[in-house]
Image (cartoon, rainbow, N blue to C red):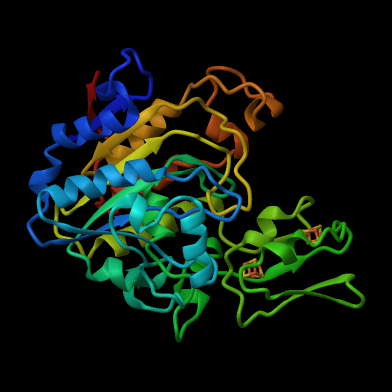
Length: 376
Ligand code: SF4
Ligand code: SF4
């Protein structure tokens, strides 16, 4: 059984040690964080830089605490994510969201290079075949995965597994394109964008959101089209469409969740046991992913921070902590009539998110049974 270290977000004493940054410091100490990394060891601190307009990412102060703890033992951390929009623009987004060398105390770099094609093909499994793992993550001897926990239109719940799977893999590979990239998870076994003219209200949000500018409306702006060769199958166009007029043909929920676990296994397969630590920030739990063009108000109150060396255990514990929460007034959750005691993230999209952890356990990434070690 793995240990999951946890601290609540509630402040009961007006002391630094009771603050969230203070609690993260205490959690790191409690789990023996500094003993896991060596002098001179390069450590990837993997997070999600967010999106222009999506500001509810892991706040720089928490990344700084992790970087400082690594530097204290002489390790060499760098803060990283993979290309989700064009690389130079994505670094600007990171900076706008407050994540830069000055704020976090370490270089902020793209794990798959400015063009998102610095990656290495690794065998994933029966669903994905081969997958393009970002070079800097592939080559790093150690990693700390700092994840913002939130809902997700496809995954239902987005945490460490999704951060490692989607975020440790490039959008595209130099030779096999999206089929070995992140899009392979979005569209297991399929991958065409399908448009329904009857449902389209010609709002052009799909065109605006495309990171590659490959959506084009023809016939005087009345017919949807896209450049099939260049398209990453990121699914953003489909996700912002108000009437499901464009959709990415893809996997069943079950296949999608399983493909996340499969990709996570490929990404984590290059690390020696005990060299990856997972920090789940259960804060600003908004309904959608940080890659959307806006961050909605949280659906669940801030809960706290969970840490473990077991990705399955930390995800299971985080899901358990969130389940049965009171939906926040004025949020998408209450708007959809979700009641206190219901599983808010499940009810938002009816996605069986638990499959992610079940599959990750089946693939040997960790154990769902855990011991919660709570610091007060
Ligand atoms: S899936 Fe849509 S948004 Fe993403 S690259 Fe393709 S056309 Fe653009
Ligand atoms: S986002 Fe949807 S409704 Fe709007 S133009 Fe694109 S396909 Fe049509």
